[in-house]
Image (cartoon, rainbow, N blue to C red; front, side, top):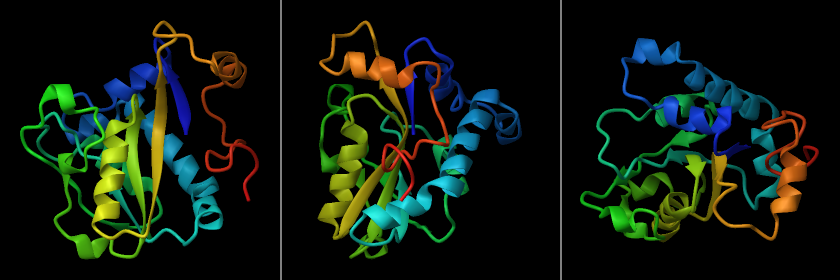
Length: 196
């Protein structure tokens, strides 16, 4: 949905929205509020585009759980409540004891799907807050496909970009795209242009 370039407000929001705090305080957290507005905007303006470009309409969604052992309801799950209500909610759990060195690897065994019937034959949207290497979201998607989901789409709130890491062949293009805006409802995150 947006880019989170290291050092920008979007990047800070991706960390601050999930700081440990009571639920009532989180609702007043500016980072949480900005991400909630992004998801509400997506749900209102662009969620239906998924049904148009995909092979089948969306039937459900899951939220990628933390592999860090976070307890309780993850703030991303609370944010995801802003997404279309006709997307049936399915639960995905983090496997216990995933070593830090493997957390970003593509490994379906990092996640457990308690009820495979909830995704069987469906088009499931995987909700992830930030894409760094993509390992978490892709592992979650692989778990769902192995459990019988017919189609999986990944919806990421922010693609995290480190400009000091390594020059990318697409860096110049990214700089043109990112000029003066981090997110716009006018650009469909599904098509990259106008809505279909």
